[in-house]
Length: 123
Image (cartoon, rainbow, N blue to C red; front, side, top):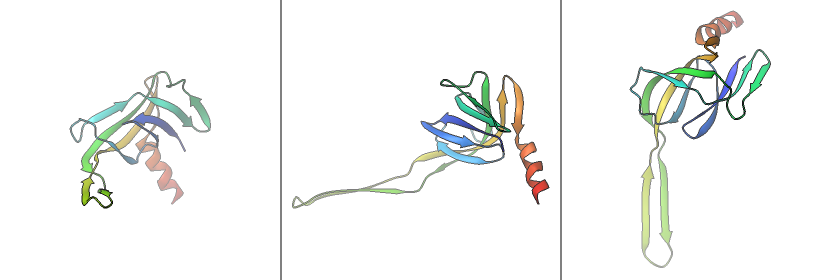
């Protein structure tokens, strides 16, 4: 199992090709390609490469599937004995990113077609 740990949208995520992830909104049109070059770690067949802070020449490529909104969070503020109440809701804007490949120095080390063949062999 090959994976990478990336930094995107102020978060660190463990990503694998062939899966999708919800990250903070990216101002990119849906169905367009997106490249992330802030790769912190790559694990390929138990060969671990750790960056300081980023792995040189490593990129993770993906496709923006859609833009969506997260679950609603209720923010309720009340001051006792003052008749002051504020109820507000918030929904975070998210982008759904489908990871297609992990590259190091321009060469693809793993892509989603390799992951699909691994899962079909297991069945």
